[in-house]
Amino acid sequence: MGRALLACVLAGFLTGLMGVFVVRMRLSAIGYSMSHGAFAGAALGVATSMNPLVTAMLFASATAFLIGPVADKARLHADTITSIVFPLNMALAFVFLTLTPEIGLTSQVANVLWGSIIAMTNSDVVYLVTLSAATLAIIYFTWKELFAIMFNRKLAEADGIPTKPFIYLIIFISGVVVTVSLKLVGGLLIYALLFNPASSALQFLEDMKKIVIVSPLIGVAANLSGLVVSLFLDLPVGSCIVLVSTTVFAIAVLLSPKRRRMEV
Amino acid sequence: MVLMDSIIKLEDVSTVYEGERRPAIKDVNLTLERNELVYVVGPNAAGKTTLLETINGLLPLFRGKISVLGLDVLTQGRMVRCEIGYVPQDFMVEPGEPYTALDVVLMGRYGRIGTLHRPEEKDREKAVEAMRLLGVEELADRPMGKLSGGQQQKVMLARAIAKDPKILLLDEPFSNLDPESREKIPSRIRRLHEETELTTIIVTHDIHNMLKQCRRVIVMINGRILVDESPEKALATVNRSAAFSLEAIQ
Image (cartoon, rainbow over all chains, first blue to last red; front, side, top):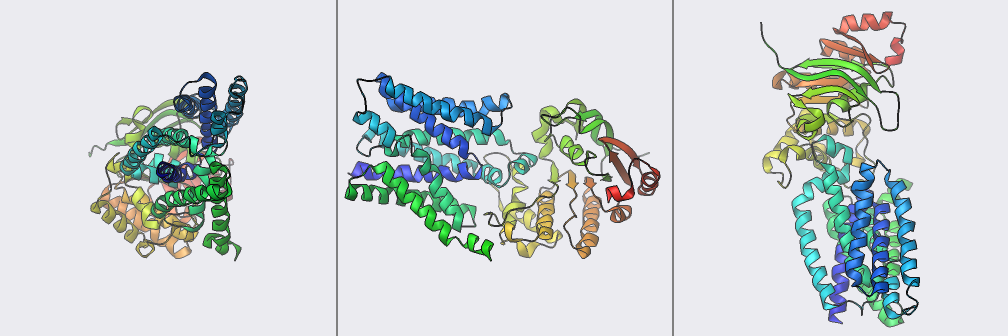
């Protein structure tokens, strides 16, 4: 149970943190694609009895590479490439899962689809701890550039900041975070962890530094609440986490001081 | 005779936007010396904004050569942009955006500070000083999105100045200002230009202010430089030109 709690806290923290950058840099479509890339990779791992974490990481990285540098090189608009890659990854995921009839809807397949807190191993927790430390360090050292790019990419470029490497960095870290957190909520719901906390924090805060602190806290709270709800109601933990974080977002929208001012 | 350095040099430059076939600026030749203040006027779609964004390397070149501060913009664009204070046209921040005015001004210095370095107290002082010059220091802690269009424009000017640039590229930087500020701010920019030997290009539609503020005017039409003269001569040429009426540039 301690491992489950720790995994929930770390995954909520990491996805809540990276979600701020993904949402503010308007990389949401890229986030969906990477989430489903990780899903397809995990499905391949299950189908071929390889470590799903490794295959998920490979697929998420390949997706990040496709929608980042390759799309830039080919001068493909982000919408175009994500619209192609998103269904491709979903199709691949279902092909990989159905190509393994002897596995069927076993617990492993179910874990990939819906997530399972029990499936989180000690290694997963170690990955999450390492990733949290590395992500915090990277964000600390690159905060200035990320802050400027989140404000306006063109202005940041005009100020002499090389924006592309920083955007690729965020895409790559988000891909890794999604992959490592995949076991918790599953491939179909993981992107909700990325977007809901950040979108909620953005509803009622007007200071980017506070948003970067509050969004991971919302992620942690939603994950822990979702875990408790799932234990009480005996429902899949991933679904409960997403339902809780969506409720938080709905409440944030209803209570948002920004929205109230807009209605006046 | 005093020898002056050429700070900006464009040779037969054409720029084509992605997906377009017609160049937005065509065969442009332009040289600016150190400490020059030049106004650029022209009707809509004349290529004024394209000219500025070609100079700072935000738009890729289709043909020709640009050297800024002795650097090739094509290969050393980032270094060039670190030395340029740029205010884009019609830049507005949405209400609710989580940035204060001081955040925005301080960001202007980020390229100069360098990757992995953090802003220091002197950077903050520069930002506050620039805000003071534009008369917006009391707005420092206000959310940018809650400021009026004119206040935002002053903050954006402060951002460009806070950088301590060698070149200022200002794209219609006074369009949202109230009448009093339209008188004051261009004079302050000119004073700054004189005191710091800033090479400055200002795109404007305000012909009257232009006449008072500079000695050289570039008139653009259809992506080409039609006139490169003193304000009086430029205005006379514009008035005589059948290509476009004065109303078109105002």
